[in-house]
Length: 197
Image 1 (cartoon, rainbow, N blue to C red):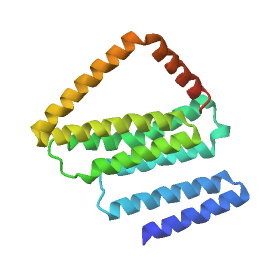
Image 2: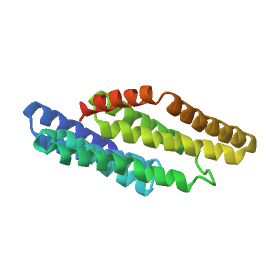
Image 3: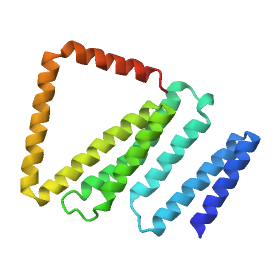
Image 4: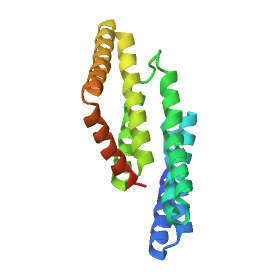
């Protein structure tokens, strides 16, 4: 019930902030929405430090968008990176802590969904920090999923390690034989990301 009341307050403050053009009301709406998320997470049994850090990171990301034009570009970028790192980092640490015992199989899948959402938001808003950190933590999550599965089944571990070795070898071969094309593609990617926030 408290989470629903907080969500209603967030919708009210958000609507008032949009109608009046007030950043302060929109910020209050963001705070209320984060309180609703924390209450919902605590109600469903998520009690780790990643819940609190994730909410704080999400709030920092929202506030950096609300006050984006009032901030210097470097400060805005730093707040976005810090917010994304606060959102992903503690959850990734919790994921690595449960690597050996594999207590919860749904946690890595939920974290992968959150990373994919971050990548989608980064691509939609053209924000490098969200896209790159989301993709990095998604790769970390997939790696931990493969390690957990390999610990359960040694044959799968052999296949994963063999494929990883072949991938590294193929990357080195492509880099050494097509260095100019790879560097040109990386240059185009850098130019594309320069236009993003």
